[in-house]
Amino acid sequence: MPYRVGVSALPFPDPPLSDDVVALRSWTTSDARQWFDGFSDELCLHFSWPLVEPFTIAHVQQDMVEHEKMRLRGEAINFAVVEATEHDLVLGGASIYEVALDQGRAAAGYWLAPHARGRGLATRTLRLLARWVFDHLELERLELTCAPDNIASQRVAERCGFTREGVLRSRIRFQGGRRDSVVFSLLADEPR
Image (cartoon, rainbow, N blue to C red; front, side, top):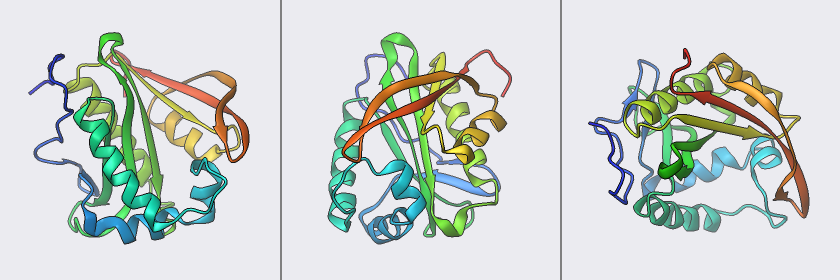
């Protein structure tokens, strides 16, 4: 059933988004250690940890609380990426954020733990997110941004049919400075 504007909380898909390999489900407090262990990887921290201070389990716990507040306000929804057949094994995380229903757009993000990389799971995850955004949230544009040197993320976007639009210079505060972002988009009427 499509999501309707005017309902503030973003609903978790029921059943969870899934293909035969990955599933996207809500985070639980028991996932905190796996989230921390997976995201503590040097690659995740390099591309996705914006703060100068070290990443800790307390950040994960705080993010879980903040993410639920954002979901209830209709601003974002965050998922644990898990094995389709084993929902307890966390492979990474994914999100739809910067949701602007009045503008018909949102942004997508994802990360994978080291043990989950190199198997096409980010591509599967992004495809599931895009299908859900267009079919159930009825949005018209999905954006994806990443660091200019994050070649793996750019390849995922391209495999999912996203179009590279350019570089947003000095877009975000990042690790004590500012960082450029490459922006990609996928439109609802484009092939996926």
